Length: 340
Ligand code: MN
Image (tube, rainbow, N blue to C red; front, side, top):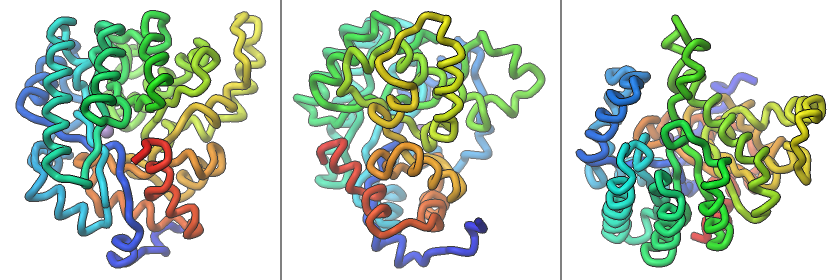
């Protein structure tokens, strides 16, 4: 399919009202945290600052760039969250707990300032899983947030570990999703990327890390224990929709590992996962995700301000979809899953 042959006019882009759900904001504290976290972990630079110069003035801004671009491209609402590493970047647990509260409160103020235009995903201090569950409860009940975004692992400990199940239990009880955002790969994979820094970051390593994290969560039995819990992945499911058959085949071959699940891996992906359109993609990739996961489980997202609105909307509007499916992905699915 030559996606470029189907270009929509700005008019058509505006007409399809969209709720975008992986949209980031930042402040000086979060910028400093990213620098400090990069130095501490050795993952200082996987993105060339020049390549994403567009994003820097837009992270903190709401009035000058963000709202006008939302109006221009028909984004009725952004569900906002901090950028990576967010609360997961704090080395000190007590600090993570107190700053998560402060950052969520600051985010709530932004949402309050622009009625109807923004909703939020909470940052959670996973450094203390019980405190993270408590903060999710507070953020949903008191601040009105629609779920949480966890910025990947916490010092390369993953959310399948039993100590984190209290977060899944709370998310299920509150009926809110957990959005698993991309993050740098574990140090254990350093050899794999040796000599190829261009494969770290968004090119490849973030997606592999995040998809593997999601499979760890599924395979640990989280969704057998909490069948109504929902996990959201960005970037059209971080390639998992493409691999449903292979995952089931491989799991069957690995059965001697003794791991027991109630359902096939692909069934969890079709019953407990949602995927968003964040990032840039080809129309055939979106069509694969819709076919694999179902038209009710794909939600629009942009990854603002790391992706320019026009480029994101171009990807979406170039994809041939029925009006009914386009409306679901644009906003109906978000309204349903996030109770907007
Ligand atoms: Mn993002």
